[in-house]
Amino acid sequence: FGTRADQYSTDVLTRKTIQEIRKAPAGKPIFAWIGLNAAHGPMIPAPRYANAPCKEMPLWTAPNNAEADITDKPQYIQALPKGSPTVDLTRLCRMLMSVDDSFVAMRNELVADGRWDNTIFVIASDNGMAYGAHRLGLEKRAPYTTQIPFMVSWPAGLGSQPRSIDTRLENIDFAPTMCELAACT
Image (cartoon, rainbow, N blue to C red; front, side, top):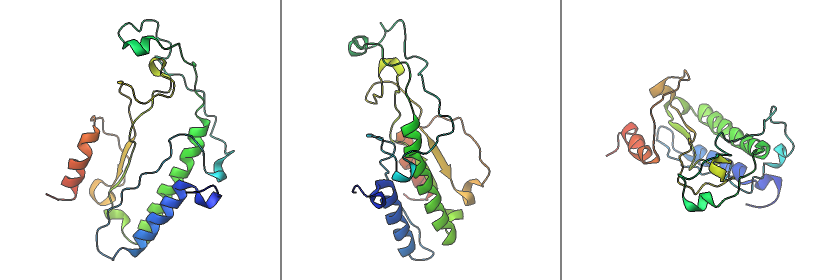
């Protein structure tokens, strides 16, 4: 949105979302799909987090970064040199701090408006990243599966105790699941 601190895209989208929540008629459902750019390149954190500590963020090494035998991989993968064995995730960590702020701000607004308990709040990613897997560096357009975050909060429907479900989900499951929860046809 711009280069000033108050124009950081995650913060702008959060403010716009909160404005829409405030304008929504009481007792009426709200649907919002917020697509934050974080954590996409060029990995620029919000100015307030430019030098924030990231709790001893270790260097990341994909377990299959230096595969000895890649004969089962496509030719273009076989032609790649071995990548850097480690990736520094500090900038990613700093960038995601603004996403945490965004979630907290939206949740606080929904709580203040009395809507939180019956809000289905989903946090998901559009794709995973290789981060060095199969010599791919930061590549994300490769035919390898990476797990992505998918978290759901719905106090009225799911309770408020955290729990994990091991069922594998695919992106194609998202729309019909939300439709079923909202009782749409």
